[in-house]
Amino acid sequence: MTEPTAPLRAVLPVRTSRLVLRTYREGDVEPMLAYYSDPEVARFLLEEPWTREEAEVNVARRMLRDGIHEPGSALALVVEHEGVVVGDIALWTTGDTSSRGEVGWAFHPQHTGKGYATEALRSLLAIAFDRYRMHRVVAQLDARNTASAKLCERVGMQREGYLRADWWSKGEWTDTLVYGMLDSDWKRP
Image (tube, rainbow, N blue to C red; front, side, top):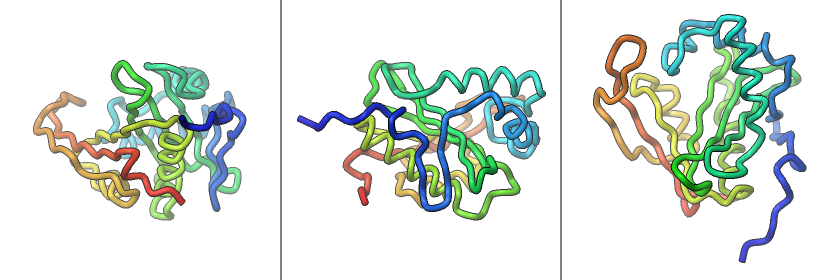
């Protein structure tokens, strides 16, 4: 039997050596709009660049994603460095169980190349496997997104699939890369 863990809210925000991962708040509309409105950031996402109204709606939705409670639930976190929002990262359940999850992220282009995404994803995987006791976590990404593929590999996720022309996105069929990690693959500190 595993030991009971404190509710995630009791351990949020999560602090790493350089970052703070916290839940969303109303004041996050401007920082999110700053990079989600950028066509280059939206290029590999499933949605078009955000407008102000879309930023308000999306931040309000993400404020409700405060933890994995049951199938269909999610944890959405803002990533800060020295009080500045540098990106965001999320974990959500897949299927009809809370033991399988998927991760996704986006980072402001001004803050890429500094290892923040790697640090944040490692922290989120620790939450998935150590806090929520997930069995499996995947990341699905546009195959052209080489930066995200390298990120998955840096944190130890295994490339499990390459799906050809399986997703209609922004007027074209796109390929999908699937990366996965099992609880047994997770390297605990």
